Image (cartoon, rainbow over all chains, first blue to last red; front, side):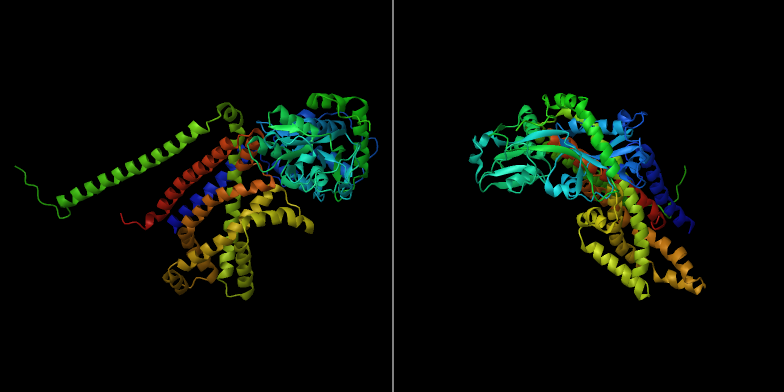
Length: 318
Length: 272
């Protein structure tokens, strides 16, 4: 019996030792607390944003149990982002994120007086609402559309992009109509998918062109996945539709595509909050003020110049 | 002159020669076995090196990030197997129980969890439960799904292990007047654990590979990191192979320790 007990002791000790070893060595990067921080990038992103300045929203006490109260109490704004959506957001080799949306989110958190941390859920779960409190806001270049407004609350737009069609150089297509009957790659649950399927319900700030007839839609996880598939030599799609910023970035990275036709629509991109989450009226008021301030004091323009080399934060004149 | 009396337990020379020949043969086999591994890996690896190439600057930049995922993979596996074993003990006792309710509940658990794919179970916890108001963050989702899944398979293993304990042990314990719970706790389970340890070890090693599925809900473990590094940069060839090699190395290391554990546990059974 003693022999058996000591051999039972070995696996038990191994299990406990492994647990302790792994928990201690990964204390920074793999938090075990069942909070929203379970899969966030290491805290480098958080330390850059925290400031002790009183928040602009603290002039009136936040509603108890509301989203603003939750964020201020946790001293952290959890933002959903995409690790593969350059130049808006992308992952660096040290595990932190970088990009236009990342900078905007960091600035918003700073103005709320809290730290920022990032989650990476899939885009279609973000646009569907019912986030379950896993993250507080989405700063992910989300277009304001009628279906999305049913489940999400939107801030004022923080920038605007034209949606640009591109065709692979191999396909030889040079006009929008040349894509009739062909396959176009888009990110899943994007407004580009909606437009191709004739279901776009957003307020465009420019003319909305008609999609090519009989176009086949190929959806991948995210827009950049389309660019990467084309760059890898995949021939499934002859076209690629996304924000002009993404198309420009792909062309700069020598993806074999060419722009085709005029922008097919212009979208307003905003920060969104889940309607089914905690009451967010005061949070949205604070967020609206912050976004408007960032427009008037030039922060958004500066960030746009930094990442897109042009100012996309003023509404294009129709 | 000394006369060496023949010892009664001396081994005949022919037996020594045969044993030496067997050892030489075993060593030869081992050497050729390892040489075959090296040759095949070398040829395949060399071919890939020449055709696709190794992107050293990329690996230098991203390797630390990717390898950091191993800790999370290990954490998930260790935590999950721990809870799976606990579930399996209760499940096995339920399956062996004379009480129809425990038996029915345990059997239903085993049937449903073995009858649905692990990926479906992960997505169920992550995507479906929120509709019922239960929102589980990604990392606990993975652990719970793996624990439930492997708990069901291990239930059957434990049940077989308990049934494999020699009935003479149980009869003797009862004859000694030990109460039934003591019989289970002190006689059956310890011996059953020795019987099932190889299977549990195997499942733990298998679980380290199944933990890769947890990347679909966003846990930043080894496979997630490999994809996050490879897809945007077009270097998936490098990253997927690195991830595969890491899982393989993990398996080799864990198998080595499992073999040692099994040898240790069986020490009482070998005749020395």
